[in-house]
Length: 95
Image 1 (cartoon, one colour):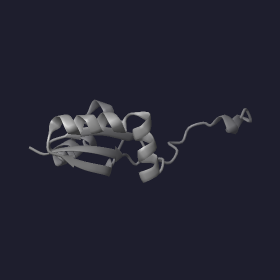
Image 2 (tube, rainbow, N blue to C red):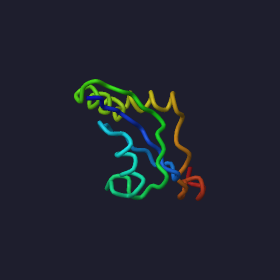
Image 3 (cartoon, one colour):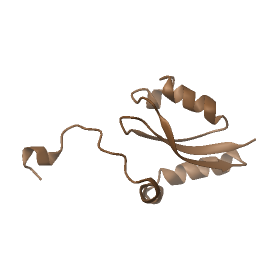
């Protein structure tokens, strides 16, 4: 069986990292608010995808992407998601 480790971004620029054996089904779950972790985002798109033969290798890669080294790797590869909005300290002159 094939497994995928993936990174998705929503239109609000939320990011989610996961793994699955059925990428199409999982992406549909994310986009239909069936996943607790991604229910506040909309229009999730795959930004990174890697295929593995074993579940354990896909899980290891997911864990790596969630580590500080993995986050640096993703930023170098994809850049940072744009700001989600909200208030910045500089808006108040406190930075």
